[in-house]
Image (cartoon, rainbow, N blue to C red; front, side, top):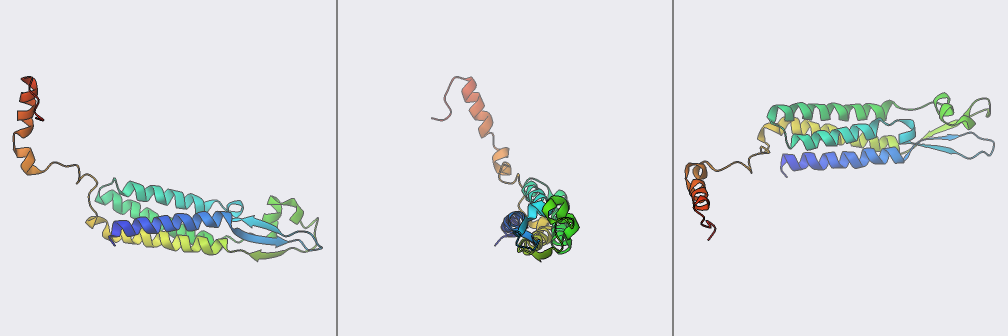
Length: 180
């Protein structure tokens, strides 16, 4: 598989995983005493994984249009965004006080004890961050070998040397149809 395709695939996988981390349960709080368990999805806890995923996908798309130097800069940026997503997945663990600001029924004034459990969302964010780091690293190492974006639209030097284009314009000026 070509490095460009692999980077595209990894960025797409990262977008899906980080997007899933926003909608899956990041943390669950059980206020006890027969009250219902309160689930907090990833987007409620932190908006960082989705933001990092979207920014990374935009950066990957721009690498298709960029030269080698800008491509390397964007690849390093994607690598850093992947590291940030990993950091968010490993460090963001809200405590009871933070969650009670979001949902007042978890406040210490209302309940004696709140039990917190983690959900699967941080694991998806971690996997998405790893995919972004891999995409950024591969793009950084192989950016010089990628096909230039304008290579398919450039004229062939042999065709540019011929006067065929000029002859067609002369035929049009003379009122003839050069396509016949």
